Image (cartoon, rainbow, N blue to C red; front, side, top):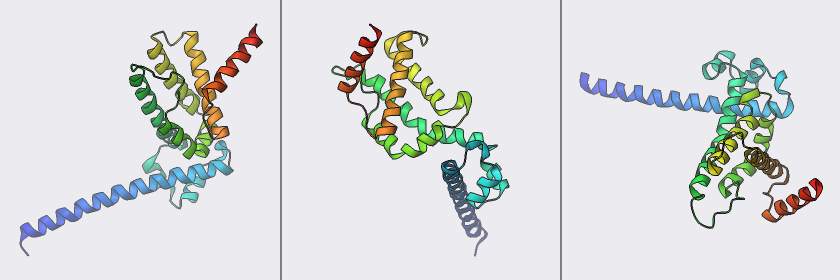
Amino acid sequence: MTVALFNTMWNNVEKGDNSMADLRFARTEKMLQLAFLKLLEETPYHEISIAKLAQESLIDRTTFYAHYDNLAELAEELIRQELAPFHQALSTRQDLKQKQNFDNYSFFSQELLSHLLTDRQQITLLRELPLGSNSFDRQLRGIFTQTYAKILQVPASDFTVFLLDNLALSNLDFILKNGRAPAKKELQAALQKMEQFLN
């Protein structure tokens, strides 16, 4: 075997090892995330320890720290993943807003609605985590605020934006609880009742 051929083969092995290492890293990260969500179903967040998560994931603590600095960072990564479809759907919505016959009530696209229903239990668990400004709802409210302020061309502090933020979050609550989006007629009926209540 020539030196050149040996070097080529060794380089291929090294590349393969790197790819395998990347796959192992990604698989371990996914295992940690799934184990964390499983623990959340049974255990309050403040009672989950890295040792308990490592045991549930069948890894050691050192491996955990190769992926995350702490449990909050793991929780925030899961929240980031769940919020990504909102970013996508709402940026698409801003583009569609320019078109005629756009339905302003369409808070959630069909793709986003499907995502919410598929990840319903996971999103419900993540919404309960006490992460302050990094919590699911706080970050989602920020996404809604940015979107509606831009669409309406008003400051984020405008009261209309606050109302729309809360309407969007109420839509989310309704979807997660009932497994469907509220119909536009339901909103109109609710607004009429609110108007009667305020008069």
